[in-house]
Image 1 (spheres, rainbow, N blue to C red):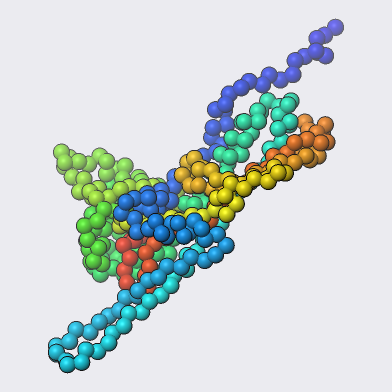
Image 2: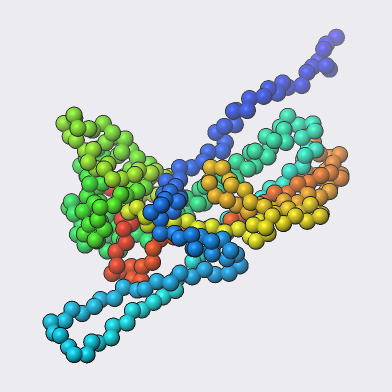
Length: 348
């Protein structure tokens, strides 16, 4: 005789934090900097630009600009003043569409340890994780494309090659790149501004070492931190032989504009259950357009626990946004500097 036939099934305990390491949001220092500068009172993004982008779905947005010109200073006073007209240009904004959607089957949770809300939350969280890494990648790509190709004076004995300022420091705690960024910005006629510095994990390590220095220590390096906001990202890679890489960006240079589809703005609702709307996605702080519908479906093949759901209730959710990462116009990047300096650090 034995009780084996009535042996209890495996025990399933509830521990909501058990899978907390599955969904990790990346550090997004570049995206955060674009967002912060664009939202600041000093931003060059105007209310007119933001509003016209908002209403531009399915259309292009262009910004007028007047290009730089080199004028001739005379040593004469002519009777007839020669003409010297400006050259204008129209710059077309480039948008990237980011969208993700998923479905919910409420009755699959009838006999499941995972609740409807847990299932929905994890699907939504997975979207946030991937959206953040995608946005960060777009922000870094824009910084890379807009970094200065011109520096008037490469100070501190650094080398400017491949449009990157390179430092070779005796060790990671003996880097002076931060203090040398200021005079290099000044050599490009950018003065007296605060800066955002966006660095990768290697640069973060340098900052952690510098935290050990202060005005009462033998080596005071607190000056390097003045007028600079520090941000960190996992989306900037080191080139071969480099230990740290980052960007220094003058304040008031970066911005983001977004748009969603017209039905989302209008909040369209159909009698058959299709709905459009907008939602502020937490963690991203961006307003996405939302799209929802519901219908009856056969979900019996979804998994082994839904074989009886030959006619059941399906919900579909989708979230979408068009986004553009912006920097001020530059008519000739090979001759006109921008206040975005890319730097990297090697150790000797």
